[in-house]
Image (cartoon, rainbow, N blue to C red; front, side, top):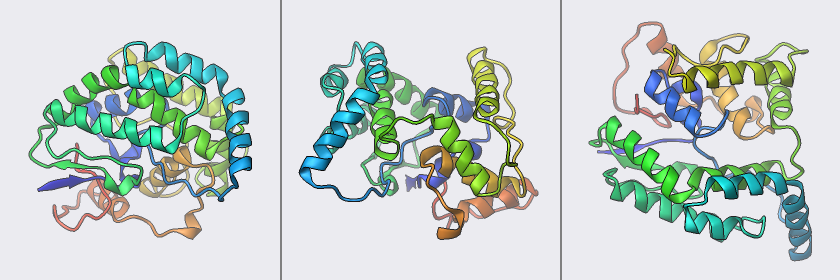
Length: 264
């Protein structure tokens, strides 16, 4: 069977065990795997060039840091050299990443710009997946490139990401008004430190979410990917109810879980 993973299902909240949380931490801050399908208005060639040039300037420090982190990854160095990441370059990186994962034992691995394209064979042990990911992170520079590409796509002006995420969470009524970006960063940093120190980690960062935990964690995953997320504009994914029922001690069938990851 093939393991499919919808972008929503890959929110940090779904990764319940410690190994999965360490995987999430390695993907950088509050970004799990990347969704590249942010809906941006079409621009003319001249406007697009101007926007890319402005983003290259606004993200100059991030590009330099990414180049330093990917010194041993030739394709990443080539892509990052001009402070721009085109869609074609991102597709090339995704192809390299998918090939690397396959070469490291994750049979059937495939990932493209469409978040629904992410899949691999169910028969692959989780330990093999983790080991492949660790090897391929260093070899390809995938996470540095993909995080920058996604950030520029949804936040071309390079506004404070934590502030945008908090605004999204507050607007979607899962955080109390007044919760600050500084408080958000503090919770995330404390959690990241626990992962780095190899501490025992139960669950995820302890954000003071309101309402149903499963719904709140779904919204958090979406807001951390795209601060424009509106819970009223989309239906709740099936995996959210699955997680809710599992937390309540109810059993769930292993079939028909559209849009959820069985990686744990």
